[in-house]
Amino acid sequence: MSMLGEIGRLLAAFGTSSIDVYEWEQADVRKLRLQNGPIWENLTESHPELQFTGWALAHAVTKVDYLVERDLLLPGLGFLLQIDRIIDFSAGANLRLVPGSAATLNDFTRSSLSGRVGQGLSLLFAQSKGYRFVCHLASDVAVASHIASLGRKTKAADFLFENNSGARMILESKASFSQPANDPTPIKSTLKAALTGQVDYWMTRITPPASKGFALYSCLRETGNAVPSALIFVDPPEEPILEPVELPQDQVRRRNYAAWLMAMGLFETARALLQPRRDGLRQIELPVIRIGERRFAVTVQYYFPPYKHWGLGAGLEVSVLEAISAALSGEDGPLLAYDVSFPDGPDMAASEIESGSIFPDGSYFGTFDVADVERFQSFLL
Image (cartoon, rainbow, N blue to C red; front, side, top):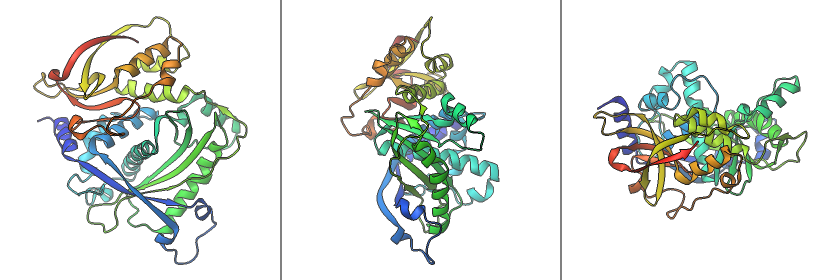
């Protein structure tokens, strides 16, 4: 079996994992310092665990890789090739690192991988809060222009999310492979830096405004550590808008889908979606697979031998691609109106996607073969 075939098998066998979730009161996070001998349980509120499959985590990291404009040799795919060296697939319910992995990675690799896993977990966390669409703030032209105009060092928060009704949320993601315990002092320090350095500023700048904001710290721990891996977050209140940076209502969705079109290999379509209008749309024929009652147009990212088994692919629900086609012609209504009902809740029945993941924005990531193809369909893209 090929290496990616083995990774696919591991992801399918991963089952459902989880990570502990804690919330800090922003008043405590903003303090100059905590009192002596701070007690974790007195400072935090425990929330229900965040649950996800191995495919969902891989889907999330892949999506983030294409959202963030960074120089990765193999975005998404590169992470999959390393995932079994980082994540312990036999650790049980709580998400764990392979013993010794943090120590064996050099500083650059460790910070890169922890950041990517943390951002993937942040995306899953946001989805659990009802936010379906996302863009990377620093990659937005208006945000980059605003930062350049300031004349001082300012960082953008990581992400701007939207729910289905268009309500917005700012999120700054931090992550560590080397925070072995829920130690209040260093965790508070990390959350405060994210909150005051990035979330606060952008909560008061984006218009239409964000009504929610999160600073989120993912602390992943190795198998054998008595302390479970955890997500720790702080949720500051909405602030009045100052010197607004205009990000139109369709911008988040356009960037959300442009990233996934890049993951699908539809680079020209992805770039065009970031423009107001494009002339000369072209017909693209894609295979359509059916999962439950939903249909997805897919592209193949990697073929598993023998080649009649197509392998690893990425796709979008047919209705999403049709809405993207309309947006490329200058009609944003279908893209802004896109909605989907999940008859079984946010997650499809496990039996329907045991070798893949479906996100609430209508994107799919997983394996399929020729027998799964219902038909070929042309899209004007």
